[in-house]
Length: 114
Length: 114
Image 1 (tube, chains in turn blue, purple):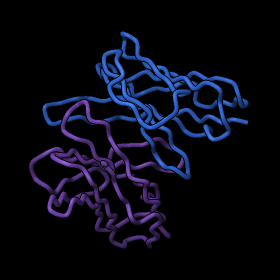
Image 2 (cartoon, chains in turn cyan, yellow):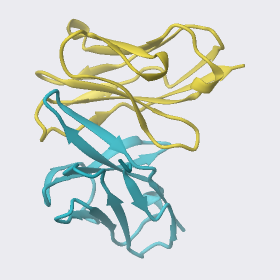
Image 3 (cartoon, rainbow over the protein chains, first blue to last red):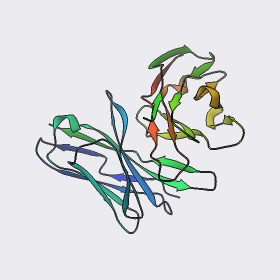
Image 4 (spheres, each protein chain N blue to C red):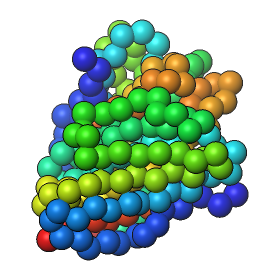
């Protein structure tokens, strides 16, 4: 099975612009979560989608939004970019088994805001 | 509030030394526990996970972790480290419900001297 894929892998934007990141989960996984990883804050949870519905949300401003499509692919959007939004954005898809839920991570999209 | 603490921010060891990385969590009720590893330039990978059963969990690459419920701990161990174990290690916890979001610790950077 192919792993979690994220596009683009690298992105450079300027302040005030908006950006859309894409994530394709592992086939059969219906849950997709997004995280922001920075050297100072570590891994922080953004939000989780399951069957096209946002199931959980972290403590990020409304400039960060997402959605999930019927094929479980997910997009994350950040509007009015700020310098502090520079980070590695990770997507993870989840497999729920009789034992519990395990997340599998993609390679991430590295966003640089100038 | 739910939280995960990794008290060792940076650990430096020589090859063949034994490793123990601490992880403590604050989470009411039953939990699922995970250790992830991120090698330089690579994306997050699952090392091992605990959902239920034997509290001593074996993972990939010779790693193991022990869940001690009374101490709210899930420490990662390896009897003899190799230079290739140089990476950042993240502990994570979530509740048993598939609607529970996963919370990550801040990570421990492990450097192995050859």
